[in-house]
Image (tube, rainbow, N blue to C red):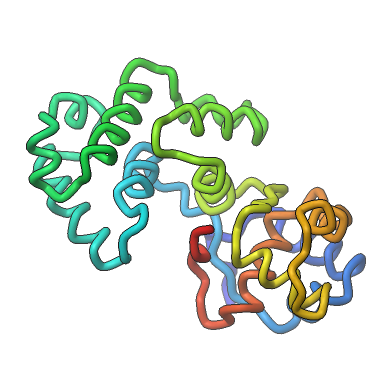
Length: 214
């Protein structure tokens, strides 16, 4: 079977290394062979979608997104900046979300965010840049690093799915403190994104998309 073109080049090395150092991951790697990671879609639209979809269902988020896209006439920074807040509200965005997407648009438009520079930046630098945007928290930035930039060593400690999987596999179902969580996952470096992906898969073996928000 041909490899999925979205599979990061490092995946085979990462799974071999993780399997050698962690028996739980060794079992999960054997069990879950299919994966999708690193979609590399348009940065501005992906992040705008993340803001639009906050705290609403997937179906509702898609409906609002379609109305929002129609309202601005094309989801590009310069178009979003020019939109009036009442029009964005009429498209289904809350006042805060309308302000957030315009803040994001302004940062892309004036160059404070330039996705072309991210290949030369480390993970924390990108996270710092993204979390300066109103409405984008660390979890959203980490999900972008994992699923869109395919960064190999991101550990989203606030993610409830990761926390749940770690408690099940490493602590007999009991919650782990953040300190213990970091201790358990330390051997996964420099492939913590990959290990996290398998933790998510262990909870939802039929799903390859992003896990639930914290």
